[in-house]
Length: 83
Image (cartoon, rainbow, N blue to C red; front, side, top):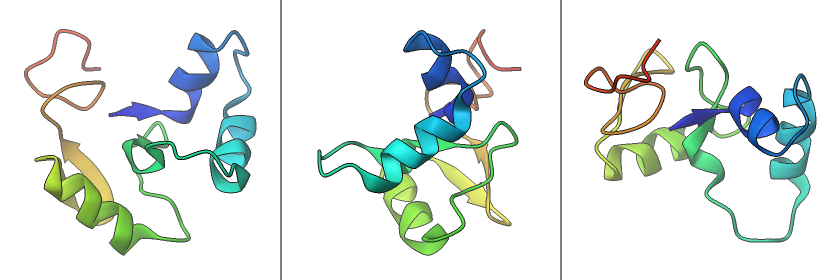
């Protein structure tokens, strides 16, 4: 699990999280878009049920349209990188 801002930072475009969202929404390349959420853990507006289902298959816990726990990444309660 990661955020749009995290992806932008790693790609060398800090503060360009909206660009990451736009690319994920328009690319024809198969990418795991469902693993990217906003900084608060909120799912994408257009397909939250699909995203929640895909995340659930990866043992990510979603409640109220937000990621509350994930096996790895920013939203993992067991990870030292968790905020």
